[in-house]
Every structure is written in C-alpha cells, then in structure tokens.
Image 1 (cartoon, rainbow, N blue to C red):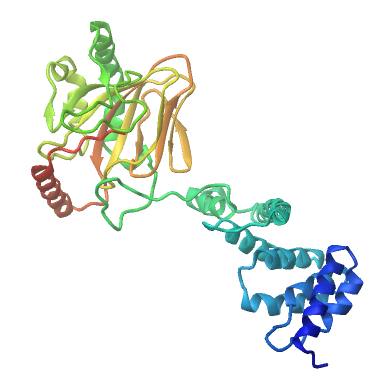
Image 2 (image 1 turned 180 degrees about the horizontal axis):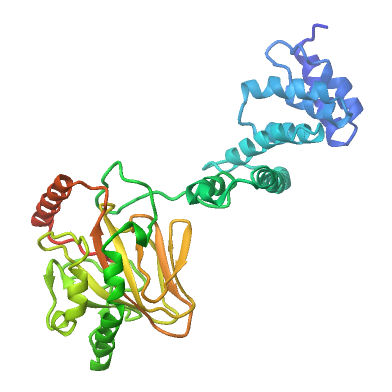
Length: 389
C-alpha cells in the first residue's frame, strides 16, 4: 500500500493517540500500515514495536526494535523496551545487555531522561542486581571445590568479576614508574629484614614510652609550608594525626634520634632509600581516637610504606585499595601508598606505629641508583616535595 505523506501523518497521529489511550489493538492496526513508510517519512519502528508488544506480538516487536536501534543505537526508550521484551521472553542474558546499555546511556553527561523512563531505569537496576546475585550463586556452587591453595589472586579476580570488589590501580601523585606489580599489600614473610625489626618491637616501644613521658614532641603530620598555599586537607595542623620525626629529609632529627637508639638501629636493617633532601624518612605516627585520614594517593610507586605497630588498639584500621587490614602489635604492615588508601581510629585509645619507607623490591640496583639521581634533580629544581596526605 502506497501512502501519501498526509495519509501517513494521519495514521501516525491516530496510532499515537490510541497508544496513549491504552488501545493497543487500534494502535497496532494503524501503525502497521506505516511499515513501508511514506514520502519523506521513515517507518515509525519504535511506535510499531510498542504497539506490537502491548498486544503480545513479541516477534514483531523484537524485529521492529532491531530496525529502530540500527539507526538510533542509544535511544533510551527503545533500549528499555527491548530489555523488558527480552526479559518477558526469558532471555535474561540479552535483557541484561540491553539494561546495561540503557543505564550507561542514561549516565552520560547531558543525557535527557524523560520522567516516564525513570521508573523503568530503576527496574533495570533492580534486575541487574538480581542477575548478579544469580551469577554469583552459580559461580560459588560451580567453583566450591577450588582449593584455598589456589591463592588470594584467584579469589580477588573472582571478586572483581562479581562486583564484590572494586578495581584500584597505582595512581601516584608525583612520579609513576611503569611495569611494577599492581599490589596493594606485601606480606611480612617476603622480606628477610622484617623479622629482626619485629624482634626489636619491645625495645622500640620502650623508647616510644620515654618519648611520650617526656611531653610534647609530636607535631601535626600535615602542616602549612612557608611560601606555599595551605594543603587542602581537613587534618591541616590537626594534632590528631601527629608525627614524631626520627629521620626527615634524609637526615636524623635531633634530639629525637638520640633519644631512640634502638629504633634507629632497627631502621638501619631495612632497605630505606637514601636520597639527599628526601630520604630516609621515619616517624612515630600517631592517630588519636576519632581521627580519619581521608582517601588519598602517595607521591611515588617506587617505594613501599612500612608500619610497625607499637600501640594498636581495637577500632583502628588501614584500607589500601579494596582491602582493609587492622594493625596488630609488633606485626609489620607493608603497602604501596600510590594506591588510594585511608586510615581511621574509631576506638577509644591512641594508635601509634613506626612508619618508614623502603625501595620497591622489584627495582634493580641500577634503577635505584638512577631514580636517586632523578629525584635529586627534581628537588634541586623545585625544592623538596612534602607529602601532605
């Protein structure tokens, strides 16, 4: 049937009016006549799909939506309609794909979302949550016999697949060295120098107690530098996150270092970078009850940060990437601070750790030597860089 443009316009108006009035059969009758279009008017496939779906002609609705989405692949209404149609036909995998595409389109900057589509988007979110739960249950059952010896990387990969864990990567704020393992935490037994330092925990704790008994000695970790804008950190000049400096800018801090000979001797066992004006650095780091160090990234991924807990009460923890670990007295925590990390004290007692940095173990002697020259050259140009959390 060849239609003139006026005839096609009239049929389209009658079909849309019938759809709005809930008369899907009449709408389908009128709109189906427009399958071949008319001069200057393509076939209204989306309207045809809506009418066909409403009267249970799912095959025709599917075909019409395929035709429409071929020309407008990110049309939100059509994507949601197709998703609902696939779900009604028990094709959950296809429904999931269309819902994900629709939600992605809706999240784009400047997306124009008609109010009528908002409830359909919420339906899609609920459906995707249900599908994820079914998929998770399926994998848990299918893989229940995987031995624990398969290791934490296998479990982490599955958690990422199932959305149980978020993917975090190194994002140092100043200097990125490529090719290093993307590991948030390193384990104590990977380093032969850890055990001797842990064995000195009692002697180090005794020196810390003497420091605390002597009175003021801790300063806020985040401070304003002369001639620089104040850091945008809520803990600026806050003693809740405090530091008692033992090494700073590559030199011992006196009289602090002299007060703590056993601590200084223990630090000499670790592979601490020696970079003029920058490292070694080592502090007693204090976190008082109620203090929260917000999520942030360290300056470099060429180092690891070490915490030897000396006072580790309940309610205190460190999150690096997607993993949170508590401090335990005398048990070293070693992590890559170029990952997003945060720390908190939600307990009732102060937490104090011995904090220092070491070279990344993967770096060769030549790389360490060259990086020392690079960092020294950077600092000669712009002055020492201070970590402001």
